[in-house]
Image (tube, rainbow, N blue to C red; front, side, top):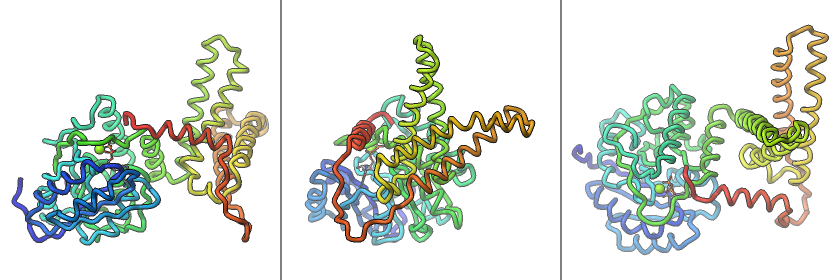
Length: 399
Ligand SMILES: Nc1nc2c(ncn2[C@@H]2O[C@H](COP(=O)(O)OP(=O)(O)O)[C@@H](O)[C@H]2O)c(=O)[nH]1
Ligand SMILES: [Mg+2]
């Protein structure tokens, strides 16, 4: 390990969600590792347990300044907490570190030393470079998913992520003065990716890496879940292609699901007409749920009611499906183009129409009644189903 470069004041930002039992050890190890530095530890907490009380207790006798900010609303999840931490940090050099000790605080001096060399804006602790170790990721399944996600992400942002072996690591140092915090739109776990892709839009951020051994979580449970996986995919599509890309991705998934369901049902002996109807119905509902959760999440609050949105969305999609074939036939007949070209054109036009209809009609903001009493509406049956699906997807799992 290189000799510590003393004199750089640093804030260690620790996002926490129910990490009560890890706080004391994390503070003690961080303070010991950075004894030669001017360091502040800043917890940004979204817990529903008494993590905040524990932070206050530990802070009272800690060897270094320890602060805790508790958020009332979990906006942007883990990423949102990190951005708040970056804004509130006392120092410009910030290190983001998990609160479960999977990120060894003993690596902090090496990260600061690397930063001290002066040629990097971000120093990431990589699980994948020489000496790095991702054993703490647990099962082969989770390792595989994590690896595949990294490869796909790098392929999508070849230039910006070229020099990063682990753009999704949660353990990194960043020089806050090089970031435009207002540009960040954090969504879930992958905050470094957001920073590298979006905050570096004006000027590329220079990335350096140090190898890390990703440890086992000390206490408590992981908050990674199927929903975090889906949030990640959504985040990726939005970063790369904007809202429309995300909408297209969901549409594409729906088309694949539709074909899969039809195939399975006909294999089971069902006639193709009912199989097609069931496939289409499941796809329409599935697409609607996904677009509600991921594409138009922010617009929902001011749009019309859930049932109205669903009815508008489903009618449009059914009408479009029903109209597309005859319109296509008309194109072949009158323009004398090939059926393949006509299909392609009709699909592109239909997609654009569908996106515009959803953005401008289904999720259009409705003018609020000025003196209407703002009461939280009681959950409708449909909302309860959505919430149940959401709760299921939120269960910690292999991602
Ligand atoms: N503030 C905040 N921290 C979170 C949230 N979700 C997870 N964390 C923290 O982020 C870190 C990484 O989460 P973890 O559940 O260990 O994910 P894993 O390491 O990918 O399994 C931990 O310190 C969690 O407490 C959240 O919504 N808000
Ligand atoms: Mg963890």
